[in-house]
Image 1 (tube, rainbow, N blue to C red):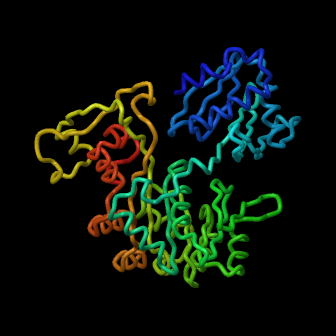
Image 2 (image 1 turned 120 degrees about the vertical axis):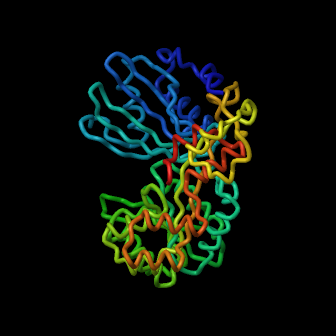
Image 3 (image 1 turned 90 degrees about the horizontal axis):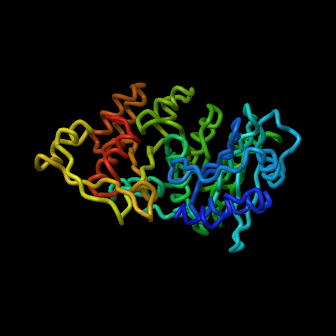
Length: 405
């Protein structure tokens, strides 16, 4: 598909095509390929354009290096940035109107490098967001735990994982399920990536001083039922969010941690009191995104039992000397044997025993062991289930999860 689009758009004849038209074509191509980011990178003797598709960067064009200033100026004009300022990083936003008359929000970031300004455009495409919880990749028992937690009248539900692991999409899928005329939902983000009808969304703004904490305080005076905080970044935000969850509100938020148990330790290290964490946090979901095998070209493979055991396969899953799985091949409909991504999840409810460990200020290892005894899968185990189901490959799971977590 990438080649087809490349042939269609006049990449080779970029000299002849006006820069304006070429930038528009490139942005439309990014949307068609479901790219999350576009990178415009100047080097000493050449210029490179790459797109991040399914979490991987792919080179899509190499326009002449002489065009780097015109390209940068065009994108800066569209995003209302200062075209004369080339020494400092700048951030802006722009709207892209597609041929179908659908409008998209794009976030633009510029950075002065040795050979000119590097630009990165983040595509915020609400239409591409999957807002059905059942389609995100949750195992049935994990989904049941999550749905039960978000339907409680109060408490705090945290989604954790690295940047780009689909945390925002998971939160919005939860909000989409809760979004009825009977509840008042407010969100504060930096920036709002998915627009959802019926929800009051607020963007953090540094210049006037609208921070997460200030927006949260204002929300509490707006008669809310459900609050969503884009990220718990500091102690002040954490404390207000916890206070809100203890005063009859459901609070959803994200943190950057490796797994669910370490989230409780991170909150404590931020300075939040242990008794507040135990009383407010009801469930934590850690997640990663793994690429799905192309259904048209994947081929069966027999994995040796010792390789599976080394990867963390439970011995009771083994029924013979090999395990049946699938591996990528590659065809015209996919990229190197993969097409699309799915989530792997560790869904950990905070039980009474877990609250007891929090109050004792236990470490993440003790909490992780308790979670496993309570039937909570590790991320590695959740990924291995996807391998058994033929959704992804063993190498993909090993690359995205660590042993014992």
